[in-house]
Image 1 (cartoon, rainbow, N blue to C red):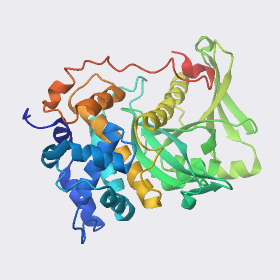
Image 2 (image 1 turned 45 degrees about the vertical axis):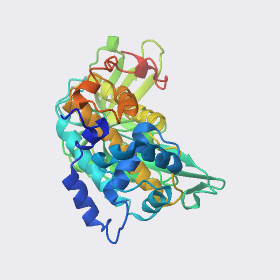
Image 3 (image 1 turned 180 degrees about the vertical axis):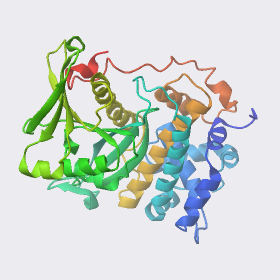
Length: 393
């Protein structure tokens, strides 16, 4: 690449501009727009994510200080706080949602052959949600409880590459299990969920779609054992059973057999019981899949710590959704850069390097060579001890 171009301009080149134009045209985002197109709005908000700007005035001040460097990065309009605020307020958030999903599809192609660390050829996804607390007086549209507002970020994370494939933004009142009604399940893929998603009618719909689920059983679930398979108890496995539900309503909702796997952590003694509709994968692999579910928790922790999705530049529902979707697209863009440039750096390291070199005139391929951060390693020691085996290797 041309050494005379800024790092930000080179990063922006990785964006599929024609696909963004399609998203804008779909919702008439630039209709009667005189200043600051949707693309310029996106670049300014992406700049804010990459450089950790605190407010709209902070964005305006920093961008104006860059002077002519902005023009060659795609920002032709003069940065103005009021104009950016109006754009976030009025431009349809679905423009940025659709564009984020375009980037997600690109990441899926790049990470399709990523090593999962488990002997499994099929696709595997982790489903979970995180709550973002808001001030009720500023965000009355997101009322959660009597004195509290909140939104929920429901995420389906691909475990090969750890990037989100589906993201749904709802009010805090929406229960996690209802998200299963919004998803289309891929035949042959594994979906790993915690007990909050245990609804036998919905799980049976997933079974009918020929997808596999892995979840944990509740203590009050009642089963009748059909037969047991031998297990190696030295690995922590306690039992591997084929069972049927015996509760009147639960059996009507899920009449087919289930696989029930018991696991006990050899160090802590904590016991876990898993349910799945897959009978061919080894029992130990099922426990390893559930362990890998922790990646979605790390994803939530990462984006809350390193992206601007807890403090918002606007208070309307549209402005909040615009900011969240642009933050997600920045995360996916970092994942795409990491794969295309074959970087050993962690996403955190890539963000940190970009934040301090964004407007240097250095070839993008050289930026990360000049800043040799350590290679990404699994963050296992920092994982909290929920079930005991999640922290074991």
